[in-house]
Image (cartoon, rainbow, N blue to C red; front, top):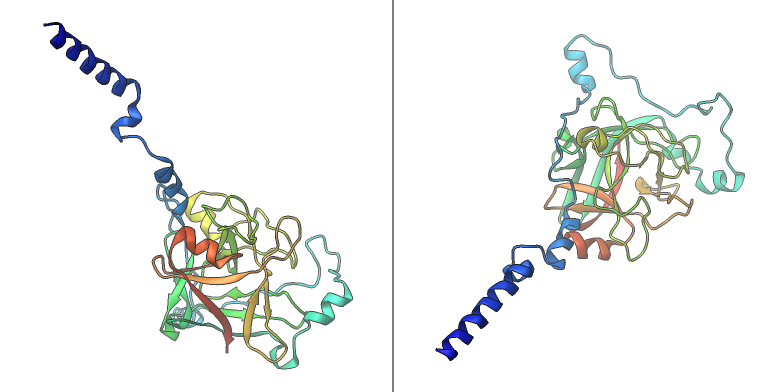
Length: 281
């Protein structure tokens, strides 16, 4: 009887310990499961708001409307003062005459398994994707006669956010891109920001669709050199530094992002493909 009583006490002690330590049940998240929360490229609980897309010139003409007016950066800033730039920067980034705008075209995308275009259609989070059909491509306007960086302006993308730029990623721990960091920026529609500007709290398609306020930049584009149609993006960090800015395509999501460290990003979010953008008129 004494032995049976001791066994009952031991069983009761084990059961009491299990109640006192609920992690023993396996119901609560482990650190590994908690870390997975940061592997979501987009918010999964956002009440997404559909965004209006602009009509193409063909659609406008078919409806008896005038063509879209191109959006080009004005020489003066919003205060009316002429915008000045250091002469060294202007000379170093001045485009070749063959590429001086304004003109319209599409963004040709190449890379491993990629030979298509930046798509006019976007996902529900306001991020631009990929298409292999030129007829479905995003049409953009460029005016680079004032030097680089310049804007890419869509004529058949988001009506309220015609500038093609970068928007801080939902899972990023800040707007800065840097080595060893998985931070990223969506390629999405934005409103205008100044050349060489740090991330700005301006309207953009991701924030409008999801309700998550994220910083953005628009005037980040340049040509690789004076004789090339290859586009290069340069993100500006909050301290004004210029990190490596790699264009990456995420096959599982069908969208493009800017990253500062492709390997670090891939380690957190899975397989990606480095992509090259080129202006094709």
